Image 1 (cartoon, rainbow, N blue to C red):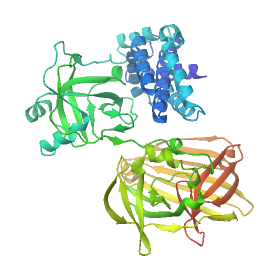
Image 2: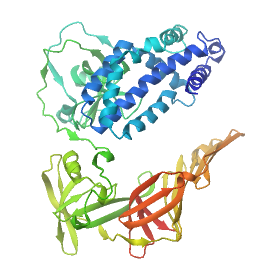
Image 3: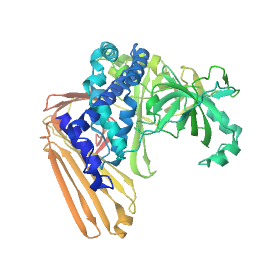
Image 4: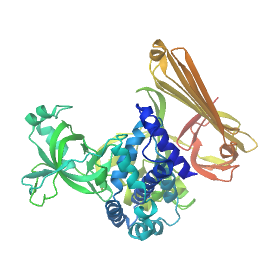
Length: 538
């Protein structure tokens, strides 16, 4: 199934080229294209598994990173991926089959009962003969070369390599804020000539990563274990061949700010051992957010009832680019500490793991009149700043055997009436008989400005206990087209519920179960908190 989808996707990408008449006379057949896309899919799945192992904090991750980088270089995967990425940019849907498989692989690794063993086995896979791309996909490289020769995709472009040993000072991403401050805050989008006048070419050093998951944009980052510099150095070239590697580059900073610099006209510097650290202060490396499962304990093994002083909530409207309601919850413990990221019931918070991995999520609290005050902690668990009053109010747990009867919902709107917009509503209907049904519906529209130019485009979807349905379509210049689909039977959105303490347990008809943070926000129970936000009775 995957293999036929790979070939169809690649063919569709080629046939969508502007020169469609020439594209139909393809230099490769579907089976050969299939091997090219499947070779890249293998790399994308491997990268997703590597990232998941890193987020899980497994001990073998540093060795995994080295093994994956070495495997890619030995198999010469990067040029293949660059060609497939070029196809993706021309494809109407863009997303490659490998990206879809990568998402599945990531979730599979994250759900492993023994992630250390799973990640160790992946390490051995990259070192073994079973991952020899040339044997698995012998026609892949020929397919990529044929597409480039036929000018159906552009050849991969690489920066020049400096043959001489580098001399001077080298900048790290953590020094970008100080460099920007030394130049009155920096600059945005200068030409190469103007940027050279503002600052001569510089040497920079960091590890290459994709920027926010984008397949085609790359940055240099500075990272040490769980900590990372806030600032990044954006690369103006395709750095696919060096993802995961630490590099030294020379180039011109055409953008410079306290959070980001853009390196243009870049040259690779393989001989940078003689470079000295730049004489600029480094901003502290910040702890990164850890995955929920790394601080999640088994039910009943987290905060004991006797150790919990209060659960507080605060909400307010947000109107930047739309309209939504945002809330945060915190747990106050009787030892005088507070936890500020409760996305699990308190009896499932692994306090010891959380204090070790995310001390910045903790704070100190004290009573102040009828309310509370909070003092934050830094990345090392040290108290910082002044005591500040909390706007939160305390909530009560569910009494054993509690039931709800009615429909509770929450809506949001993003965009504007004149521009593109999306409105959505999340709803749960609870019955006094212990049954529930979840639903979510959304409507997107191209807006009044597009309508004024003769284009009216909209899409709607609804997911509930009866199934999933979606409709999309519109008219452009008087011509219209519509499409619709219906998936699943809704069993994953209906079932039985149970309320107790600060927990709602949802047992779905498809067999899976969810245990979520929940409580009545007010005593009259017309607003209830479920999972990650409150719902108000319709």
